Image 1 (cartoon, rainbow, N blue to C red):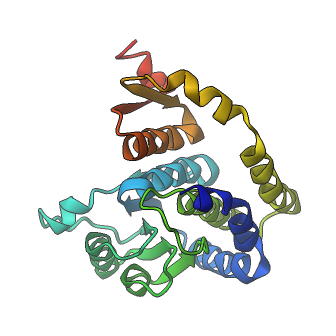
Image 2: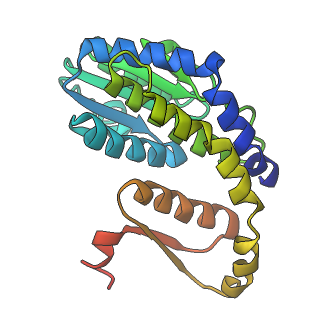
Length: 247
């Protein structure tokens, strides 16, 4: 897991390179040309948190209604929603979840524009979708996903901003900002502060994570990671919801 985490700066650099940025730009331009009226994301686990981040991006940056679909509504209960004017995006590191592929198949049959965002471009999910985006994170060794999560965030950001641009090409200012990301990530990983602070919480019996807006999905991901790796109960709340319930 530590090795996966350390590979994040190189993964960002790879994803931002022309070999991977150009295909994302082409997909973004194709989506923009189709002018979907709303966007539906479908995912599981860690990828569900990346999809939630993308839903925030979609509503804020594109001005389109966005939400997360429950795969079970389609695969277990047989729902067949009208998705004829929607962009339906399946997000999955492995691309191998049968329920997500089934959601995209049903969506495509109903006339939706379908897109897979995955670390496995040859996966069933990518094969089912009309378009696919490769997050190019490389093989992830640990069961607890780290580098694939942040690569999904970056790929989804590039996709949404490309759609916003219309032709898939990000403005120069945004490209410069993203080009600085690998170095910023390397500096963050070199910061000893988290290691210094961790012993303070070694006797914690339960944990709460919180965030607002773009940070909220990662607060949820942090809670999942704490449960996966430390076996501690962890709850995630948005900063707003925290004040309307637990506090």
